[in-house]
Image 1 (cartoon, protein in one colour):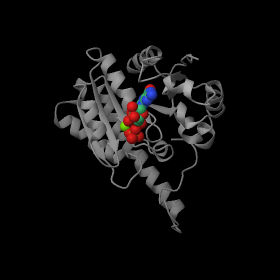
Image 2: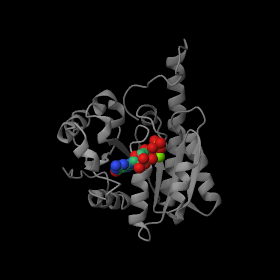
Image 3: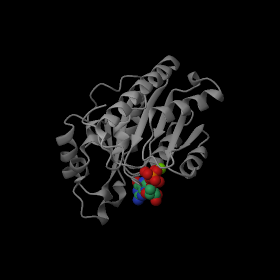
Length: 243
Ligand SMILES: Nc1nc2c(ncn2[C@@H]2O[C@H](COP(=O)(O)OP(=O)(O)OP(=O)(O)O)[C@@H](O)[C@H]2O)c(=O)[nH]1
Ligand SMILES: [Mg+2]
């Protein structure tokens, strides 16, 4: 957890500030218990976060197809409503737990604990090497709520503009890696990729940045290599950016 808490009351509550501190502290305690469960089972957990539609599910689809048979993987899929994304990912033959949050714009540690329990009910967690979490599409709140994950990946699409890391710094400051998505659309946009990367590094100076297209597969290899180092538990070492 890093940075000051934002207002999760989403409205004017006189006791809002204290409520947020309590809420986040309680969440952190549960997240630590989740982390222990994952560590005891030897599962590496990666939390994918972005604004709506940046390409989280598409990146997971490409990734699951690429690592099939190499890593035992499961997914906790968070959405406010529907199992549409969960269904997309089940097509790749991996266990997917769908968690719908209702009105909440992010997953929290309690929901994550529930997801872990659902995976356990179908067999022990130890059978997995890697657990992906796709968080609810939102560039603000998911960054505030630790789930017990080892690694956070922030995605930003080239269609979103170069300014997003400056406007939503917490998401990029708390990430361990940034994936710039939809690279195949660059020829159609007035968008400066080095400018975006400079903004990412302004907020989080040494963070690795990968730029790729889940549509064409361009740029997938460096991301997959990074993923492999993560699963081996050495992902905290600095990784050279691909750009
Ligand atoms: N051209 C292009 N389109 C992409 C790429 N990745 C995703 N898209 C498209 O962008 C749209 C949203 O992609 P999703 O993968 O569903 O995005 P998401 O982040 O999972 O969306 P939410 O879960 O709703 O937040 C879909 O129409 C995808 O086909 C890409 O690399 N290139
Ligand atoms: Mg999705």
